[in-house]
Length: 257
Length: 266
Image 1 (cartoon, rainbow over the protein chains, first blue to last red):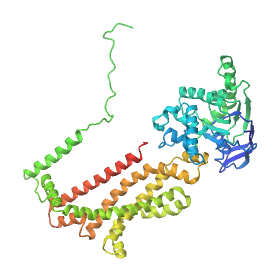
Image 2: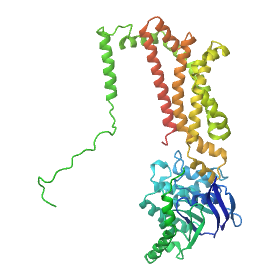
Image 3: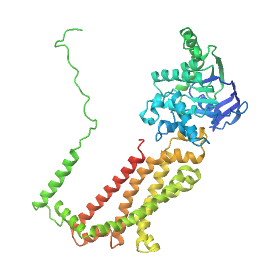
Image 4: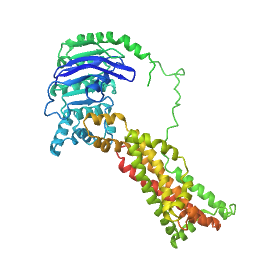
C-alpha cells in the first residue's frame, strides 16, 4: 500500500524529536530509515504504526488496506517482544486469537508462517530455549501471520551477533521475495540498509529532519552478486559520510534518561 | 617450536573455587551433628531439661500430643483462622494492587494510603478489632486479613509495573483489545511477582495467627505455646514451636509446587 507521511513533527515535552517529515513510500517498496542515535527514527516508526501520536502532521494509506490483511500496520521489534510463557506457535497465534477466525484457519495460518520462517520443528519450544536469531524468526512469523500491508521493522537485527545477523538477513531477503508488503526498516547498520532497502532515508539528529534520500538502483534480489559489491560499499561509504559527524557528536553527549 | 626444556614453565592454574556446586549430603550431616550434640548435652546433664529439653523429649511430647489429639485440635484451630484470613486479605489485596498496577488514577489514589498504612504492625490493631468485632474468631481473622492485604497490594502492584512496557506495546500493535492485553500479557507477566508475594503474605499470616492467639484465645498453636510456657512445660512448648516450623515448611512447599506448575515456562 502506498504510504504518505505528511508534515510529521514530534516532541517529547520541550525536546523536539522530529521536524516536518514528508515522505511518500510506494507500494511494495522497502525504505530504510537510518541516522545517528537520537535522530528520532524509532519515534517515526512508532508514529507510522499508530503507537505514538505525532505532535503535528499525519500518516495515511492510499485507499483501503487489502481485505485479507488482519493488521495492516505490523511491527517486528528489536527485542523480539515475545511472551516467555507461550510456546513459539502460541506466540504466533497471539496475533490471530482476537480476530474472528475459525480454529482451523488459525492453525493453518500459524503453520504456514512457521514454515515460511523455518520454525516448524520449533513450534512447541519456548522462547528461552531458542537462540536470538530463532527468537527474531518467531517475531517475523508473528508479523507475517496477519498478512501486513505495511511491515514496520524496528532494528530487527540489532540485538543479534554478527553471524546470526548475516544469516537472518539472507532469510529475510528470501521471505520478502515471496511476501509482498510495503516495508519501513529502521536501522543504524549501514550494511543492512544498503542490502535490504530500495531507498535509504538519512535523518539528521535532534530534531530529526530528512537529510537525504538515496535510491539504490540495483534490485534488492540481485545485490548479493559479486559485481554489485563495489556499489554496495560505495553506498555505505556515502551514507557514512552523511552521518559520521553527527554520530560522533551523539556519542559524546551526556545521556538524559 | 623449541625443544621442551627448563626455560618452559607451565602457567599455574588459578581459576578454581567460588562457583557454587551442589553438596547434597552436607545439609543432612550438619543437621544430624547439631541434633546429636544437643542430645548429647542434654543426656549428660549439661543442659537442664527445664531450660532446653532434649530432642528426644520434644519428639516424645509431639508423639503424645499427636496420640491424644491435642496437637490436631490446636493446629486445626489455627488453620481455621489462617486460611480464611489469608484468602480474604489476598483477594482484596490482589484486587486493589492489580487496579493500582493498571490504572494511573487508582495508583495515585491508593499508593499514599497503602504506603502510610503498610508499616503499621497489624497486631497493634488487634485490640481495636476486638472492640469492633468481639473477642471471638472474626477479630483474629481480620487481623490476619489486614496483615496479608498490604504486602499483597504492594507485590501485585510492583509485579504489574515490572511487566515490560514493550510487551504491552506489542499487544497494542497487533490490535489486541484492552481485556486481552490484561488477560494474556499483564496477568501472566505479573504472575511471578504475585506468587513471590504469596510467600511473604503466608509467613505474615503464620506470624499473626500466633501473636493473635497469644493475646486472646483458648485454642490454637499460639495459645498452646503460651500456656505451655506459663506451666513451664518446656518440652510441650518446643513441640508447639516445631509444629509451627513444620506448618511453615508445608506452606512453603505447597507454594513452591504451585510456582513450579504455574511458572513452568521459566
